[in-house]
Length: 304
Length: 298
Image 1 (tube, each protein chain N blue to C red):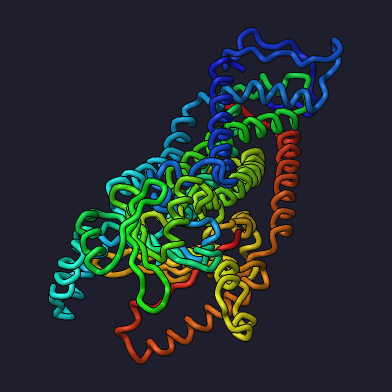
Image 2: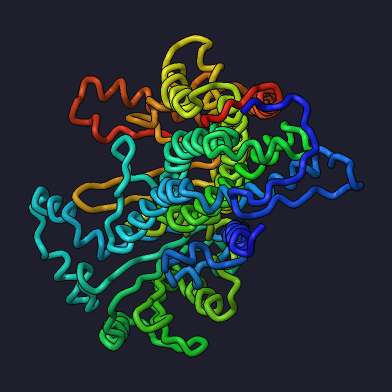
């Protein structure tokens, strides 16, 4: 099938593969809905599809691992095994463990992974399931479909990742010398940071999903190949990564010496916070616009 | 949107809001610090004044039972003579009868003078202690329903007192300060109401030894030379804690008042650590005890 460049108004198919009928957007009869209203309709439709897909099992496993680890630390602490995690030979307190887990597990792994798996699949899944036709023949701009799906991705991942971080905070922050009160400012910053990370990676991988032929491979290569290598290399290459700007917003400090020192040295020349925020906001806007443009212009050829 | 999806989203938002609310309330001191850790500082803090300059805690039981203590005893070749003599006089076996000790200085003591007090928790033979006090010319009195033993220091007009505040808790200090501690325990205007202090005390739970102090409170109530006070880095709070087992892990924290002060403090600590490292180069045995500095910003 060849995707039409202008979206014709055609009747909805008798049976939608997702079993939930696509409601007709509100507006005057025969009048195409506005972009925002169309995006919200697609968000409404896609939310359930994303939440109750096979990918959710993967999402639950990925997000459940830090919680299981936090629970383990909690149990060890209850049995009097203190100093389960050490940095530079010093037993880490609750806030330090929490900060390290957010940094290493969430920011450096979970957020990029979710971005890759969900972001690249926004349009690719519809193409693979041969259901993209049903969306594109609706009287809504193709870009609204992409934006609606992107918003559904944000809601889905945020609703799973952020509560898990809060639970991790309740489990881990009071350990050792830590306290809920002391770690609370870091929690608030972490939640904001993870939201920004999900948005930035999601937009980038939405673009990759809309533009490239093998988006999953391309996304994985970017997240776990390019980003890791570029961050290690001296010079300006690290500025072409999202992790570089996210890292400068991380509020946690790590003990000097050992692994903490090595990790901190990688981000020694982190840009100011406002610069990072501006870059990340720019990434979201630019990549989302590019993804919307790619979705609007590209011919999606479905295998017969 | 299906009902299942709606329930999931609402549940997720509720978990998020509940966690944030708990954190927010804890941050502003509205709930007991660290409700999930089963401890929020020793119970004796209710006898410590809220304006105490320095509060210290020692888990005597933990220290006495530690491998470190046993090794030190072997190294020193210590005998039990001194401990035995003390036990004969007071009925207190320091190694077995005292569980932990809380002490404070720098708060308002008797007659509005800077005071200090030691609060020991353990197993005490009150009748034996009273008998010993009477033998040494002391007297036994009741104050607000609490038993007090008072001993006068000859020629100095001061009176040393010990009061049984609760079963297993004794206060030791001068008489006026001990009386204030008894009153404080019944009034509630104590360290538990000082959220800034309690935040820091709660953060040290689990340590064998700790001390928390407000630099302002200490300097206001002690006569530091003005030259020394002017040269001190602008520290608001300081704390030290240690965990004793096979060895001793110690952590010292200092909180600066502002960013400039924090920078000065960092420079000072970096300088000290650099000096220590230089010294350690010629003494490899000292390397394991080199301090590892870390910085955090509130």
